[in-house]
Image 1 (cartoon, rainbow, N blue to C red):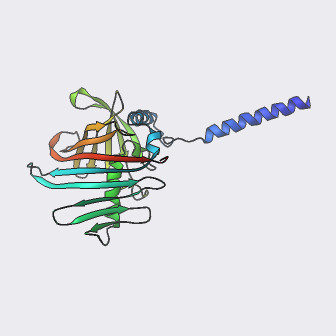
Image 2: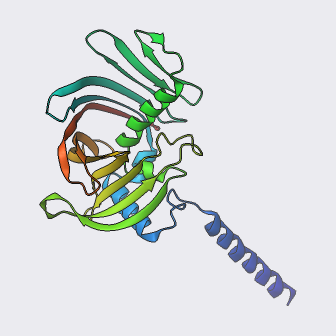
Length: 260
Protein backbone atom coordinates (compact mmCIF):
# COMPACT_ATOMS: atom_id res chain seq x y z
CA UNK A 1 0.00 0.00 0.00
CA UNK A 2 2.79 2.41 0.92
CA UNK A 3 4.51 1.65 -2.38
CA UNK A 4 1.32 2.45 -4.31
CA UNK A 5 0.91 5.74 -2.43
CA UNK A 6 4.53 6.75 -3.18
CA UNK A 7 4.09 5.88 -6.87
CA UNK A 8 0.89 7.94 -7.00
CA UNK A 9 2.57 10.95 -5.39
CA UNK A 10 5.54 10.66 -7.78
CA UNK A 11 3.18 10.56 -10.75
CA UNK A 12 1.29 13.61 -9.51
CA UNK A 13 4.55 15.53 -9.01
CA UNK A 14 5.67 14.61 -12.53
CA UNK A 15 2.39 15.81 -14.01
CA UNK A 16 2.65 19.02 -11.95
CA UNK A 17 6.20 19.69 -13.17
CA UNK A 18 5.24 19.12 -16.80
CA UNK A 19 2.28 21.48 -16.42
CA UNK A 20 4.48 24.15 -14.87
CA UNK A 21 7.06 23.83 -17.63
CA UNK A 22 4.40 24.23 -20.31
CA UNK A 23 2.97 27.22 -18.51
CA UNK A 24 6.30 29.02 -18.39
CA UNK A 25 7.35 28.30 -21.98
CA UNK A 26 7.35 31.54 -23.95
CA UNK A 27 7.41 32.37 -27.62
CA UNK A 28 8.28 35.55 -29.52
CA UNK A 29 4.61 36.36 -30.10
CA UNK A 30 3.30 35.58 -26.62
CA UNK A 31 2.90 39.31 -25.88
CA UNK A 32 0.41 39.61 -28.78
CA UNK A 33 -3.04 39.16 -27.23
CA UNK A 34 -5.13 39.76 -30.35
CA UNK A 35 -5.49 36.30 -31.91
CA UNK A 36 -6.20 37.71 -35.37
CA UNK A 37 -3.01 39.78 -35.22
CA UNK A 38 -1.05 36.76 -34.05
CA UNK A 39 -2.36 34.60 -36.89
CA UNK A 40 -1.46 37.24 -39.49
CA UNK A 41 2.03 37.76 -38.05
CA UNK A 42 2.75 34.03 -37.82
CA UNK A 43 1.75 33.58 -41.44
CA UNK A 44 3.70 36.68 -42.52
CA UNK A 45 6.89 35.71 -40.71
CA UNK A 46 6.73 32.15 -42.01
CA UNK A 47 6.34 33.52 -45.53
CA UNK A 48 9.29 35.89 -45.02
CA UNK A 49 11.69 33.09 -44.03
CA UNK A 50 10.70 32.10 -40.51
CA UNK A 51 11.46 33.34 -37.02
CA UNK A 52 14.23 30.77 -36.54
CA UNK A 53 16.17 32.12 -39.55
CA UNK A 54 15.66 35.69 -38.36
CA UNK A 55 16.96 34.91 -34.87
CA UNK A 56 20.01 33.11 -36.31
CA UNK A 57 21.34 36.20 -38.12
CA UNK A 58 24.55 37.57 -36.63
CA UNK A 59 25.19 40.42 -39.08
CA UNK A 60 24.15 41.85 -42.42
CA UNK A 61 25.78 44.27 -44.85
CA UNK A 62 24.00 45.82 -47.83
CA UNK A 63 23.84 48.85 -50.09
CA UNK A 64 20.85 51.12 -50.41
CA UNK A 65 20.28 53.74 -53.09
CA UNK A 66 17.64 56.39 -52.41
CA UNK A 67 16.19 58.98 -54.77
CA UNK A 68 13.68 61.49 -53.38
CA UNK A 69 11.44 63.61 -55.61
CA UNK A 70 9.63 66.91 -55.26
CA UNK A 71 5.97 67.22 -56.16
CA UNK A 72 6.82 68.47 -59.66
CA UNK A 73 8.96 65.38 -60.33
CA UNK A 74 12.34 67.03 -59.90
CA UNK A 75 14.98 65.18 -57.91
CA UNK A 76 15.36 66.54 -54.38
CA UNK A 77 18.25 64.30 -53.28
CA UNK A 78 20.15 61.11 -54.07
CA UNK A 79 22.02 58.84 -51.65
CA UNK A 80 24.09 55.69 -52.08
CA UNK A 81 24.65 54.27 -48.60
CA UNK A 82 26.50 51.30 -47.14
CA UNK A 83 24.70 49.73 -44.16
CA UNK A 84 26.42 47.42 -41.67
CA UNK A 85 24.40 45.88 -38.84
CA UNK A 86 25.50 43.55 -36.04
CA UNK A 87 22.57 41.83 -34.35
CA UNK A 88 24.30 39.56 -31.81
CA UNK A 89 24.76 39.72 -28.86
CA UNK A 90 23.21 43.18 -29.09
CA UNK A 91 22.27 45.52 -31.92
CA UNK A 92 24.90 47.92 -33.27
CA UNK A 93 25.97 49.24 -36.63
CA UNK A 94 26.80 52.07 -38.98
CA UNK A 95 25.52 53.76 -42.12
CA UNK A 96 28.05 55.57 -44.32
CA UNK A 97 27.87 57.51 -47.59
CA UNK A 98 29.42 60.35 -49.58
CA UNK A 99 27.90 63.27 -51.44
CA UNK A 100 29.64 65.56 -53.91
CA UNK A 101 31.39 67.42 -51.09
CA UNK A 102 31.45 65.49 -47.81
CA UNK A 103 31.50 62.01 -46.31
CA UNK A 104 28.85 61.16 -43.69
CA UNK A 105 28.32 58.53 -41.03
CA UNK A 106 25.67 57.33 -38.60
CA UNK A 107 26.92 55.15 -35.74
CA UNK A 108 24.84 53.29 -33.17
CA UNK A 109 25.49 50.97 -30.24
CA UNK A 110 23.83 50.32 -26.89
CA UNK A 111 26.40 52.65 -25.33
CA UNK A 112 26.46 55.61 -27.70
CA UNK A 113 25.16 56.93 -30.99
CA UNK A 114 26.33 59.86 -33.11
CA UNK A 115 26.72 61.27 -36.59
CA UNK A 116 29.92 62.33 -38.34
CA UNK A 117 30.91 64.58 -41.21
CA UNK A 118 34.30 64.01 -42.81
CA UNK A 119 35.23 61.82 -39.85
CA UNK A 120 34.42 64.47 -37.23
CA UNK A 121 31.73 63.71 -34.65
CA UNK A 122 28.77 66.09 -34.84
CA UNK A 123 27.84 67.53 -31.46
CA UNK A 124 24.37 66.82 -30.05
CA UNK A 125 23.64 64.27 -32.78
CA UNK A 126 22.96 61.29 -30.52
CA UNK A 127 19.16 61.28 -30.77
CA UNK A 128 19.00 61.94 -34.52
CA UNK A 129 21.64 59.23 -35.12
CA UNK A 130 19.63 56.73 -33.10
CA UNK A 131 16.45 57.59 -35.01
CA UNK A 132 18.19 57.30 -38.39
CA UNK A 133 19.75 53.96 -37.52
CA UNK A 134 16.63 52.39 -36.05
CA UNK A 135 14.43 53.60 -38.91
CA UNK A 136 16.60 51.80 -41.49
CA UNK A 137 17.13 48.73 -39.30
CA UNK A 138 13.39 48.53 -38.59
CA UNK A 139 12.34 48.67 -42.24
CA UNK A 140 14.95 46.10 -43.29
CA UNK A 141 13.67 43.39 -40.94
CA UNK A 142 9.93 43.75 -41.33
CA UNK A 143 7.71 41.93 -40.46
CA UNK A 144 9.96 40.47 -37.74
CA UNK A 145 10.41 43.82 -36.00
CA UNK A 146 6.72 43.70 -35.11
CA UNK A 147 7.76 41.23 -32.40
CA UNK A 148 9.61 44.03 -30.55
CA UNK A 149 8.57 44.86 -27.00
CA UNK A 150 6.17 47.72 -26.51
CA UNK A 151 4.59 47.73 -29.98
CA UNK A 152 0.81 48.06 -29.78
CA UNK A 153 -0.81 45.99 -32.54
CA UNK A 154 -4.39 45.73 -33.76
CA UNK A 155 -6.18 44.10 -36.70
CA UNK A 156 -7.91 46.77 -38.79
CA UNK A 157 -9.81 44.49 -41.15
CA UNK A 158 -9.21 43.45 -44.75
CA UNK A 159 -8.67 45.83 -47.66
CA UNK A 160 -8.01 45.57 -51.39
CA UNK A 161 -4.81 46.84 -52.94
CA UNK A 162 -3.89 47.13 -56.62
CA UNK A 163 -4.51 44.23 -59.02
CA UNK A 164 -7.28 42.91 -56.77
CA UNK A 165 -4.90 41.84 -53.98
CA UNK A 166 -6.69 41.41 -50.67
CA UNK A 167 -4.68 42.19 -47.57
CA UNK A 168 -5.01 41.98 -43.79
CA UNK A 169 -4.33 45.39 -42.25
CA UNK A 170 -2.28 45.48 -39.04
CA UNK A 171 -1.90 48.80 -37.23
CA UNK A 172 1.22 49.40 -35.13
CA UNK A 173 1.73 52.27 -32.70
CA UNK A 174 4.91 53.14 -30.81
CA UNK A 175 5.91 55.00 -27.69
CA UNK A 176 9.58 56.15 -27.80
CA UNK A 177 9.17 57.88 -24.43
CA UNK A 178 8.73 54.51 -22.75
CA UNK A 179 10.70 52.22 -25.08
CA UNK A 180 14.25 53.03 -26.10
CA UNK A 181 14.06 50.76 -29.15
CA UNK A 182 11.26 52.89 -30.67
CA UNK A 183 12.45 55.66 -32.96
CA UNK A 184 9.08 57.23 -33.77
CA UNK A 185 5.58 57.77 -32.45
CA UNK A 186 4.10 57.65 -35.96
CA UNK A 187 1.26 55.27 -36.77
CA UNK A 188 2.09 52.44 -39.19
CA UNK A 189 -0.33 50.26 -41.16
CA UNK A 190 0.99 47.02 -42.67
CA UNK A 191 -0.73 45.18 -45.52
CA UNK A 192 -0.23 41.40 -45.43
CA UNK A 193 -1.24 39.41 -48.51
CA UNK A 194 -4.36 37.47 -47.55
CA UNK A 195 -3.17 34.41 -49.49
CA UNK A 196 0.55 33.97 -48.76
CA UNK A 197 1.25 36.42 -45.90
CA UNK A 198 3.74 38.64 -47.73
CA UNK A 199 4.07 42.25 -46.61
CA UNK A 200 2.84 43.98 -49.75
CA UNK A 201 3.02 47.56 -48.51
CA UNK A 202 2.75 49.85 -45.53
CA UNK A 203 1.24 53.24 -44.81
CA UNK A 204 2.86 55.57 -42.29
CA UNK A 205 1.38 58.77 -40.91
CA UNK A 206 4.05 61.44 -40.54
CA UNK A 207 1.73 64.25 -39.40
CA UNK A 208 0.37 65.98 -41.36
CA UNK A 209 1.29 63.77 -44.34
CA UNK A 210 0.90 60.11 -45.27
CA UNK A 211 3.45 57.92 -47.06
CA UNK A 212 2.39 54.71 -48.82
CA UNK A 213 5.36 52.39 -49.43
CA UNK A 214 5.06 49.48 -51.85
CA UNK A 215 7.41 46.49 -51.78
CA UNK A 216 7.63 46.25 -55.55
CA UNK A 217 10.42 43.69 -55.94
CA UNK A 218 11.84 41.16 -53.47
CA UNK A 219 14.24 38.20 -53.48
CA UNK A 220 14.26 34.86 -51.66
CA UNK A 221 17.95 34.19 -52.32
CA UNK A 222 18.90 34.87 -48.69
CA UNK A 223 17.83 33.41 -45.31
CA UNK A 224 14.94 35.88 -45.32
CA UNK A 225 12.91 37.43 -48.11
CA UNK A 226 14.59 40.80 -48.70
CA UNK A 227 13.50 43.91 -50.57
CA UNK A 228 15.20 44.79 -53.84
CA UNK A 229 13.07 47.75 -54.90
CA UNK A 230 10.49 49.88 -53.08
CA UNK A 231 8.51 52.99 -53.95
CA UNK A 232 6.99 55.53 -51.61
CA UNK A 233 4.07 57.73 -52.57
CA UNK A 234 2.67 60.84 -50.92
CA UNK A 235 -0.98 60.00 -50.31
CA UNK A 236 -3.96 60.84 -48.16
CA UNK A 237 -5.22 58.59 -45.36
CA UNK A 238 -7.14 56.48 -47.90
CA UNK A 239 -3.96 55.77 -49.92
CA UNK A 240 -5.00 57.95 -52.85
CA UNK A 241 -1.68 58.69 -54.58
CA UNK A 242 -0.63 62.31 -55.11
CA UNK A 243 2.92 61.90 -56.41
CA UNK A 244 5.95 59.62 -56.29
CA UNK A 245 8.01 60.70 -53.30
CA UNK A 246 10.90 58.26 -53.44
CA UNK A 247 12.51 55.15 -54.86
CA UNK A 248 14.74 52.72 -52.96
CA UNK A 249 17.07 50.06 -54.38
CA UNK A 250 18.66 47.38 -52.14
CA UNK A 251 21.59 45.27 -53.30
CA UNK A 252 24.86 43.49 -52.38
CA UNK A 253 23.37 41.74 -49.34
CA UNK A 254 25.84 39.74 -47.25
CA UNK A 255 24.65 37.73 -44.24
CA UNK A 256 26.50 35.88 -41.52
CA UNK A 257 24.79 33.58 -39.01
CA UNK A 258 25.59 33.00 -35.36
CA UNK A 259 26.83 29.46 -36.05
CA UNK A 260 29.53 30.59 -38.53
